[in-house]
Image 1 (cartoon, helix red, strand yellow):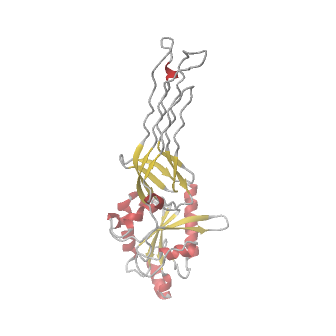
Image 2 (cartoon, rainbow, N blue to C red):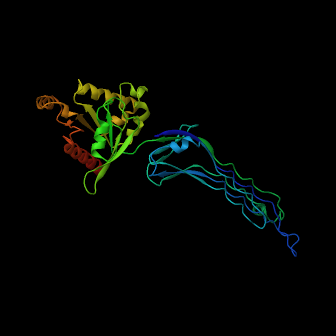
Image 3 (cartoon, rainbow, N blue to C red):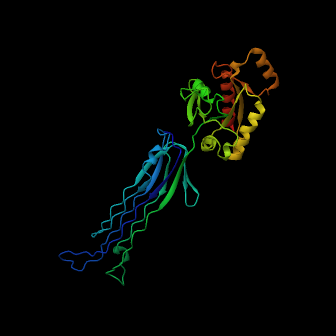
Length: 328
């Protein structure tokens, strides 16, 4: 099951209290203070794990509490620190404080670690309060409380190219043709019910990641269809590839619909480099193809995800665009 949003509660451990103790030995019946410090409370951190692609595990366990530090002891013994809790989440996960609404971390690289709740500091023992005027201090510092908060984890896929189109535009077919990804493919709308990623090879040492999200319908940014739930997964893409069914009545109207929904969801998306692809050219005879070629913009790329027609040109255009972005 693909899960890209969860809410959890985290609570770091309290720091241990400092200790009041005095040195007592055979020949030192009135030794000085030797109370040790309390241990640090356990913290909670989240690490980006490249082997994960869903937040499913957090569905079954939503409350995480680290252990508290132990109290300090005599003979200057410090209390044991609480044990840290390390949680794992997919690369691309955003971390938000639900109480303040602020983003507190972005797991945008494999191995990146964000401490979401810090353990409390251990208190000081009475040895710290000895002075020339107070040789037997009976003062200590209690440990401080650990941080706690309600946390939202929101997964946003990290890909170079994001496929955007109406339902049944052929996005999944294209992804399966260009990569080893095997999304569900059928001739009816909303076959794709969750995002899919595929690695597309450009040569022996070059490749890029392509993301396919469920089809967008008019009103998706307002919650219609499946678009609102998955539009966030193209927010990190470098290039947006608009997939349009070449047999549709108006290619331009379809493009305007797609761009309108992206703009309403996040206006920044329209500023991303984009390519317009007319798919399913295999369904037209040569005369119809010529008519569309004459009327369409020269920047449009005509392809067939089924027959493979035009895919070399598409890959060449994507490679050129990624190259330009790298130079910038």
